[in-house]
Length: 120
Image (cartoon, rainbow, N blue to C red; front, side, top):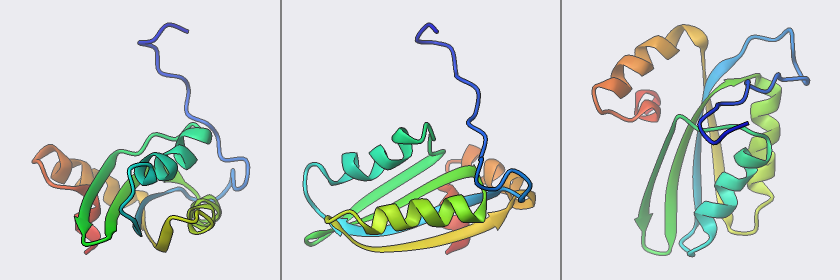
């Protein structure tokens, strides 16, 4: 595969017959140089690419929002638990919307707004 080819999306073997959703992870983690790499690495290890990432620092903590599509409820919860197991992560919340709202989010994203902000 050359560097410009996109691999095929990974099928969700945990819930092949389940409906898939757009998911927004909201985390609070230590404001350390490697925190964002550790968090995003959990998605990279499963060959998942977030469609949006937003980070802001509040004192000694990072507020992180990660939006990703195509996950079953079970897979989203497993990833959330893995995020909670990271020593640098203090809190993880998971918001999940059905595919019917993804097109609305895509329209919002194309206007320059963050997809996870739709859930606020």
